[in-house]
Amino acid sequence: MYFHHLHFYVQDADAWKEWFSQKLSFDLSSENSPLACQKGIRHSFVHPYQVLRQGNIEVRLSAPARTSDLEQADEFPCPAELYLRQHPPGLVDIALATDKFDAVLSQALAEGAMLLEPVALNATGQRQCQISGWAHLRHTLVEVSSQWIEAKERSQLPNSVPPLVSELTSGSTSKPQLFDIDHVVINVPQGELHMAATWYQNVLGMVLAQQFDIQTARSGLHSQVLVHPDGSVQLPINEPSSSNSQIQEFLQHNCGAGVQHVALRSKNAVDAIAHFRSQGVEFLDVPSTYYDSLHQRRDCPIKDLSAISRQQILIDWPQGGEQGLLLQTFTQPIFPEPTFFFEIIERRSYVEGGQLKAVKGFGEGNFQALFEAIERSQLQQDI
Image (cartoon, rainbow, N blue to C red; front, side):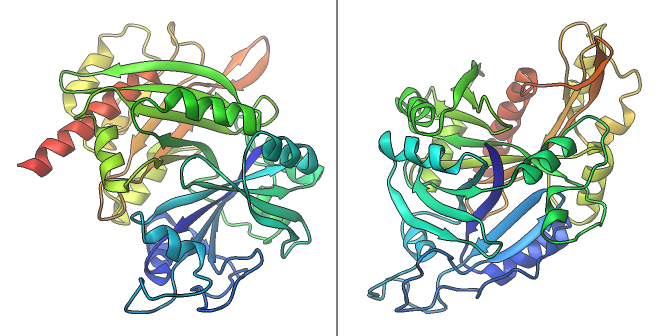
């Protein structure tokens, strides 16, 4: 199981198409369907959307029909319109690719997932359907070939420059700043973490890889990281551990559970983030004291931190400094509400047993720094 695409429901798909293109250097694909849902027409599977791509990353954008009254009665309102009546814009459909389509779908339905859209052929002749996710999230299941999976796995190898998955369908050969989806983070209300994690384990065959708690002077969170044992899907799930947690702020503004952020992988985070800053992307501030503390760790694998500190990138590594390096930074929320944001992540490679490997994990130390950075942003907004 692998990430296939990310489907956002927004009020104005044209505006967000320009944002992804101008800010994050995505390319507009020629595979777009009509921009907005047509009133009075029930779409059997293909929801109207626009497609943007970069590397292996596919982003889809759907908007409601253009009308001044979203509450107007409609026999068959489209999913984007229904969702946006209850929630602010955000990532709603985390699409998953598999070469075991029948088995995955059978297990999901047997474990209680609802079939939201029936099995149908997409534009490339592959079977796909849509099932319910946790709360109001959705998951499109897409059947892919063994060649698709081989290309995906090759592209994720350290220091590799293989044909990207997108080249199998779009012919794109441009060098991306970003090349893949690393992980998708879901926030759930307090008390739902165990239920949500168990649901994804039962329905999609995920397994628990990590769990940790983050605590600051003001608030905290509990997190469980789910991964798929046969693929690269990583799905951390968070719940607040206090009423004033920034996770709770997300839940209030999002009107319930939803996707907090998506991590997009880069092969050179320093250059990518510098490029995005020049395009006007705003990132969370990292205090200079963070980099002072890094120098106190004698096993720091990077001696000159000037380029990293200039771009305000968080770094983490396994104890000893010999098993790779994790570089991360986070955008400000991209929508008007303090809900969804992007993470830019680079997993640097290391040699073990004569083999080149990429560092794993999520940088628990960075997670703490992220949580504190969001809290500082909250305090500034309150002022």
